[in-house]
Length: 266
Image (cartoon, rainbow, N blue to C red; front, side, top):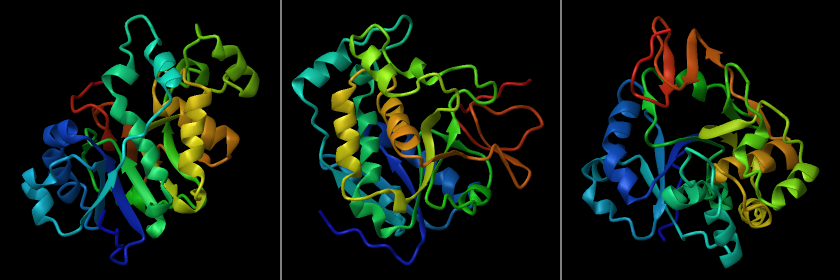
């Protein structure tokens, strides 16, 4: 793999995507971040060794795009078996439908510490305004993210795990699953000081110990960054007159990033 180089930038915006998601969303993401997002810095794409990046014209033309190719994370057969047994009414099993989400763990690889700060966002997020209000709010020795159940905080961390598993009792004894401010992994802004040579392997070990996360990496990252380590801090909901993030656009509100492209008027 070609060695990553930081072109004198303190912060990088990163996405994790397989070929399918790059094909579906990268051109839109690239247009938005360079356009309304007004971001001129480096973009880091984390993707598999087997992704044919030469097919994407915008990748070839933007000299500030960096590529980190990862090897697939391999869980034990027992871990895969338990993850695949998760069954929640009206919810697909994410380990089956979206197994690539586990590769967000690669964001915490020590090789990415060439950047001081990493701002991660799901590649299918929607950017509506300048990212600078967020990017200038530096997460010194922290991981900033939005609370998953904002603004009502009506869900608990235990909602992220499969309660019918025999492992759930052990998990609830080891961690306080009653907290309501657990975070979403759709956007994360973190100081790479919180990453060391063991971080990635410790995250993988946590999956092996508690293979009952309904939301793949999200449940596990909350255990690791908010409970085992006190790194998580909620990203401010408002900065410089803008809402930082919400699920959809709301009338008369300037929201920088939304999960959905549609508008919902409230």
